[in-house]
Image 1 (cartoon, helix red, strand yellow):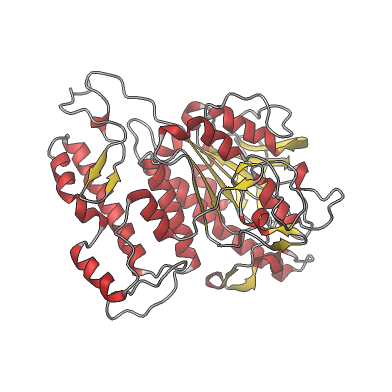
Image 2 (tube, rainbow, N blue to C red):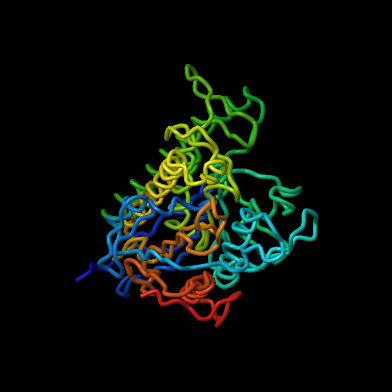
Length: 445
């Protein structure tokens, strides 16, 4: 029998200091005494990978739950029973029709909208409301942030980025209205500050030094409150609270050691050389921040762009100094295909590590992945062909019982990506029977 709890905490409890507050993760004390544990809130995350994949290396042997993930997907094998790889999904709105080139812009703009993007380089942009924002409209009021949009690569909000298409299409996947994208945050430090609070930004280096002396960390301002709370909850909650605070402190320290790419450079500790944050670390940090955002119920819907449409990021730490977009036009050359496979494998490894982080986070009888629906994929199948069918799409998590891993699902005929979006929307509590060109919600179990 579960012991009677001596303290009942609200689900969104904050540790408060003089000028900041921090959300805490789920604790047993958040369940009222003698009552069943509340159902965990459902979360949705959409991860966009640019430029398609090396489809030969995106390897799945067989269908159904007995399918074997290999090649690029090998890092996902430990969690195979908790995910579904879809083959045969397509985004009709991404195709050229009479608009000609510009597939990378369309791939990003239509990934979550499945609506036609008006070809323009001016202010008259139009595409559609994205699936994440449909969900945010339904569940966003329950959290501090209606939605969270993050990315790795900054980009212009105006101008032309791809064959007559506005940069707004290439650089955003989240659209609050058909004419208004939701700008993403590309600085991990700024994301952390938004989620958990941060001391006032001081540009002057000497003032920064004095500020750090007064407040070594965001956590220092709330340490007394944390100790008081730890003394009121049970031993298990106290340990979890301590572990959580330590993880946030370690993350903050990692962020502090690196300069902010999008603003004034923060001096590094004495004796260290200033250096930019490596791309691999930045991706891992963003995933870590997303996990913390879900764990603290700061938001229940988020998007993550691993690169903009037609991304020119390079991956020298993988032995791939060429730009991703250039490589995606591989022309069948094996060296370029091998380089693309390395990039795809890196993204899969980072995604798998994120899923493992969610699976390791206890939320009162279940883990964080059990309450989440995570969609990972690209709006282009093969960057060389610029096709918008045979899209590489993975769905992970159970969404509070709405989904179950189906292994590999290969459709015999082209199926709208909008069908998957509609299914995720319904699982998240949206009352809807259609979305864009959907023909019906996909079965998630």
